[in-house]
Image 1: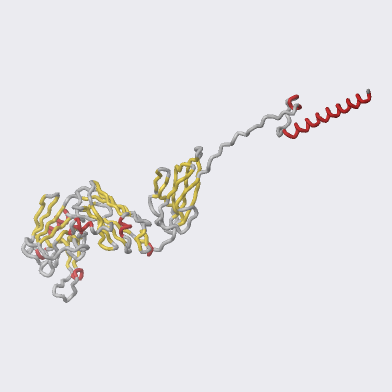
Image 2: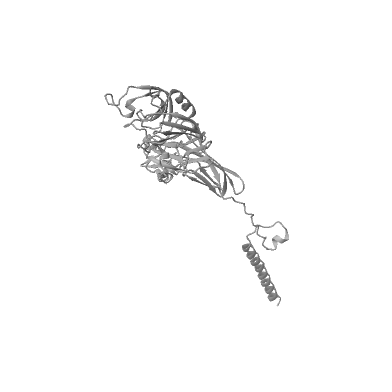
Length: 413
């Protein structure tokens, strides 16, 4: 009996030991926490609570969006440069290029609603550099620099523009004249970039005399004292026919007082009105039969002293019936391309006020020519009546001989 009891006790002891070992084994396999230094709790087999790492704040990088793209080559000169950002706010932009003379030239532009846009189109065959500054979502300043190059063009690919008047004071009949050294095929495209504004404001329109010349005039004569501003923003603008505008041109001029000379070839008199009032009546002699002075509205184009009149300038050759030797006059005001002037004519004083004996000019005495020369300026108006020979468009500044409706028909728009 004692032996059996002992065996039974040994078995119980073995089972108890195995149970403890099993319990320890299970506890060690189920825990992924490191052992704790908390004493008795560590030996109990309980798991430590998991530690969650706090996330690190992240900011989406600024995305730069530019036209043209960075590193672009052979960019067309009619490209409008722009820049904006995503995941940030564009705060500053500078665009510049290195001219062919080696000079750094800044390009103007404006920043509006987060987008910067250049105010001008591009120059050919140069490298542009874009420097941009923005604030990211955390308010930090970020910067970038990028560049592009434009396609090169020859002089035959570009149209040179000239605007007249270019400053100064002119008369109330002076049109704005824009000329081009090569033909403009896309007149409408060019006209959209040609603007005339004035103070006080006056309605007006362009008229294309040819593919190389366009005029702008108000509906009626300019108001005396008007300030006129002209912009031909044609740099990089497509002209059609594989050509582009070469440069942009700006002009400002002032309109002086109202001076209108009214020539009557039947009465052989010229009345000069200044600010609407008759200032002087002058005896004149106009063109004789076969050489009639043109009727219509003319505008003074140029003023000369000591001008030489040549028969060849009106188509005569030596030996012709009406040919004359060179004649020097002291004062001459050109009013047509075909050779009409207001000028001093001391040789015809006896016919002035009585008969028309000239080759088309309006002649007067020396004394009267001095007064006219001093009173009248380029752009002043000469209105002539009394002959059947009319003024024709293009023969000087003959713009006022068209009605307003007809004039507007000459616009490309």
